[in-house]
Structure formats: C-alpha cells, structure tokens
Length: 96
Image 1: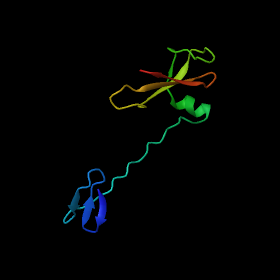
Image 2: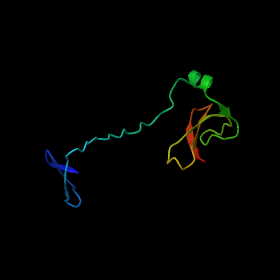
Image 3: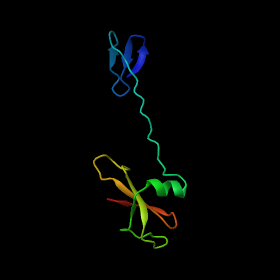
Image 4: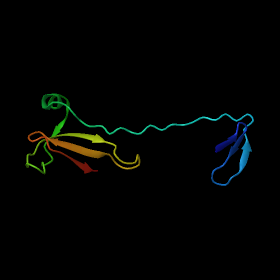
C-alpha cells in the first residue's frame, strides 16, 4: 500500500484505495545473512576443530582433514559438509 494522503492508502497493483482510520502500519526490515568464514591461525584451528581420516584432499592427496557442517541452502535441504586439509590447508565441500 502506498500513502495517497494522511488518511488514505492506495494499492500499487490494483489501485484500490483504503481509509487508514485506526490502522497501525509497521515496516519490516529483513537482515541480509552474512557469509561466515572459518578463519584463524593453523594452531587455533587445530586446537578446536574435529578431524577425520575418511576423506582425501583433492589438491595434495593427504588423508586427514578438519571438518564442519553448515546450512547453506534451504532449511528443508541437508547441510553442507566442509573439509580443510591438515597438510596443505585446502578447503572443499561436499553436499550431503
């Protein structure tokens, strides 16, 4: 609805006008989600991140990596699994 006068609103699609007597208008502002990056010194990461030996780094072939999951798509879709090689720090993802 678009204000036409202090007491009248007009629909921008159909043009219908409505009196605003007793109507309370609120504006909803949606926040944009920030992309999160896993950062830190290798020592800090090593002390806090879980590791796995079930994967192979596509860059260097090493068989140990840190891992974490994150919801990167819609809520009704599975999480994305991220890996970071413990040897070369290459990061890649696998969709579950």
